[in-house]
Image (cartoon, rainbow, N blue to C red):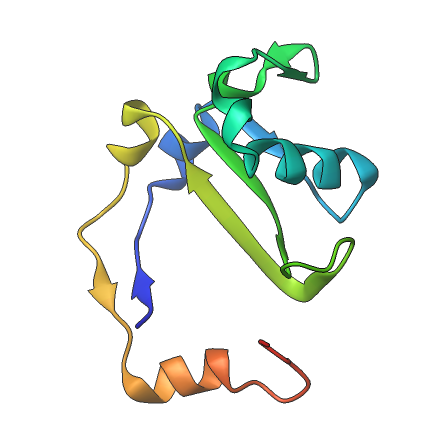
Length: 111
């Protein structure tokens, strides 16, 4: 199942956003850290700010468990604050045709 949410672009631009434009060592470290159960309480920073302090974190979608391996041309958005989540529209379920286009795209190995 794939859901689509609409977000007002101008309101989104006013959020505090941590953006990773491409795979990097900093992104890998961020992902590893926050997939570690102990990470929630240790107060690490990213870019000089507490990592949990951002409204939204955006970056390439990583494959698991193989680091550093990312899906090309796919980004994920993590809405981390009430302020950010409040911008999301009601979800729209994508049609089976659009879902197949996204998931069964040639050259993408999801496993």
